[in-house]
Length: 147
Image 1 (cartoon, rainbow, N blue to C red):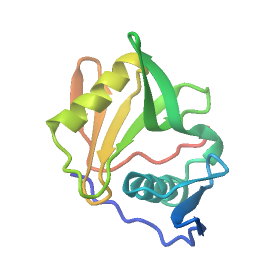
Image 2: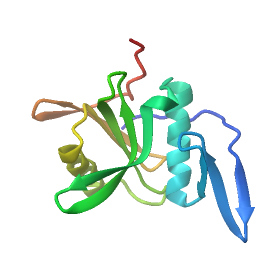
Image 3: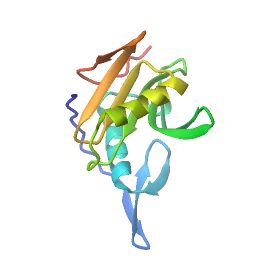
């Protein structure tokens, strides 16, 4: 398991007709504040502020094809060549991270091959590095390496 120290960040939250929305700085739009979205927004700030990834290299809810099915990756981080490097699957805090959750991100990796795979529910975070046919557990999320 990876210990994540989330940064303090002044989230922009507003209420419209009894429904909460949060401003996503990557998508540059207001989105419904669901329990999963709260985890995603915190993890985005972790990637931006602690790991120093430029927001221009991050896609949120990236659409991919799995055979005939269309799915969305919660977070995809690209390298400076525009190639996907990291997939993050976010779950609400009350959702347990299980082998099924890890299988989900592995299926995404079949369509969008990346070096690093991460699954988090905000409290627990697991990461893996794909090296050929092996998955090695990560001790920490890799940081941005400027070219």
